[in-house]
Length: 301
Ligand code: KIV
Image (cartoon, rainbow, N blue to C red; front, side, top):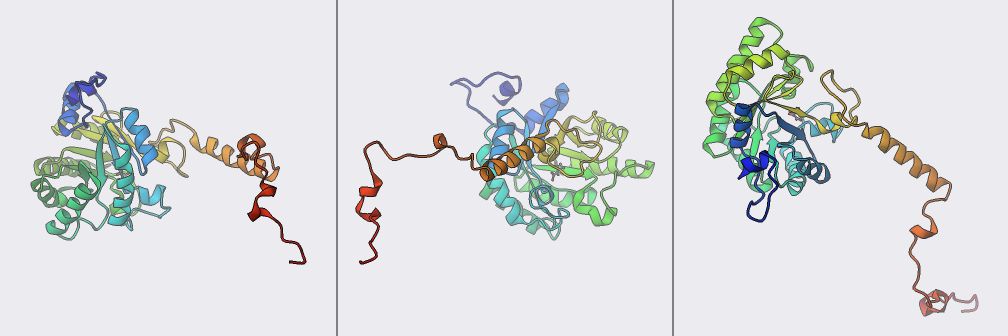
């Protein structure tokens, strides 16, 4: 039924609205129809993305930087993810909801990974989780998959490894590094991932990985040859301060918001907002001066 939706068949009474599934994503790869993905961190943005027919909505731990104003994603907590993912869940009907496991929530043991993963599934309704890292993270992915939790992998420029990488640098630029990325991709595929996010790697490396794995690849700063593309909500709308080279700003929402705030400020200062038409009025015939509680006591009383 979901494949009907993917083919653009509007749901009628006989076709219930069902979520995009991992089977749908795989079909997309095989049929070479691009997968669309976007991050969301709250209810209104999730609704917009869902209603626009975006395939995958990711509650990324990028929320630490673009929403919470943190310098990196390392201090994002399970509580942060739970809070934002619950809001996003309420806005999603059709898209696949993917939630990032934050740094530290899957690094200690398989048991810790499953406990945190189950919490995101049971308390939020996440359909799929995402973890960053290469072959070293394969045992964690196997543990989640054994617990019936689908997982997206994420390799290349993995922001949770910012300290190891020495900054947010493009990865896989040498032959050895590119080969390591392909090995990682295949290890993660063997571990059971549903899809693989490729971030900040040369186009040629991403194309090669995409051709050599059976799972769909979703690129961000990885060129046009991936099976799909993901962008961070705030980058797409011009709400980030220093967007990377790969970002295309699809709408300048920042200027619109800025103008709106300035016009509000000016209207309040000039006392042109609110107008009489924007005010509530007493019903006709009621004179509030007559109401006993409004009577002004005289000085003698
Ligand atoms: O946290 C995030 O937003 C991500 C995307 C960049 C894929 O992981």
